[in-house]
Image 1 (cartoon, one colour):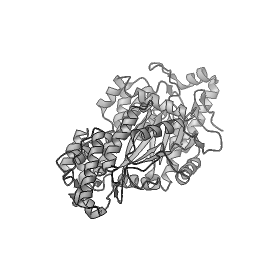
Image 2: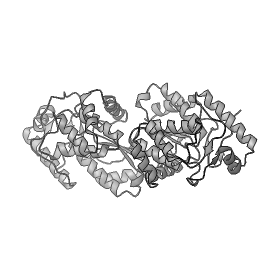
Image 3: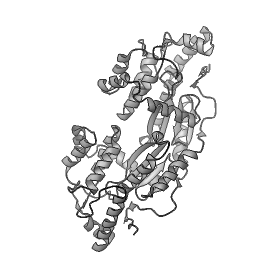
Image 4: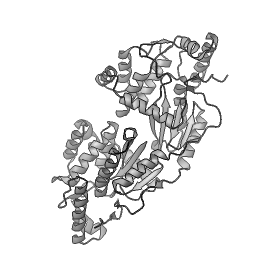
Length: 237
Length: 237
């Protein structure tokens, strides 16, 4: 079974939702048969790379919150994160473009290090004092911590076209599947879960997708030239 | 969209079927949005690593063919392969265990080199004079030709447990999806194609799976804590 998770590094509910999903997955009896793929989604796709601002300022300017509302939201997110064992810095975080981070996540995917890099990026953005925006060498350090090669990460960062199509393709696929926000979980392209649901909902989704698989629709009309345990089909003359 | 292809290196119809599928994929307008994953299937899973025999002897002993039938089958496969532009050595090929090759294909998957290694293994098994069985260094050479690290390939070959679970998991998944032979193609876990069908059938399968996607079944009951273009949900108190 495959679970695809669309998320953004700048999305606090994605950070919390990943932990909740992983709690459910750890308790799922068929967890060894579940492949998890992380997919790109930018909440703020038009933000320029050098356009960095404090999260509170972004929340008040973009979403019309009062500063008190924005601060209360961050405090509440801090409590929700803590309930999942996650550190969360409720003050003085930055907001910026996550495009380069998504491009690095596609490099990491090719090396089987996607989940590790996503964890490192979340931790850097949500838990650490130092900003993760506007500092390519910081991203290289995180990539190396996730098991990637520093040179390969630098090459990706230096070339804005590297993995750009892969990021856009993930985003188009999310739209095609009906996602309007993140985190967005898709199980075997049949079941969907929106948002940082409680672990029990993810457990139910895993059970349903595993147990209620609908049969494949065969496309071919006729017999197949195939090989099976009793030999290969005798080729048609 | 994702296409999973179960196949075995020892399966001539898988060799031919991969070429036919790729012909259809090359003409598919959304080909850039199609991810292809190769999955393991052993036609002869109980064969010991050192149990190597000529294909003709295997066909007569295991499937009760006469030697003339077996040779005619190989000649016919040679013609079908040639029609796809593939070289096929109709005489004196060997048969043996493909387990180690499938383990290497899982290493290659982690490095984004799965299709390349599968092509190299097919070519080595079906087209070249030198046997691909019983020669670990030959497999290392093929892995290197496909872009993998020689040391990593040697480590996998030296440890029979490396990627063994991944091979078995692919095979269990094939059984769960109803596959009894290979090649077996699954599109977005919704449509199935059995056998080395003509390219037109693969084209139809791609069109159907792309166009007739059924909507996802939502699993959650309630509202989601999620972030979207209009901001993140205000956390529940």
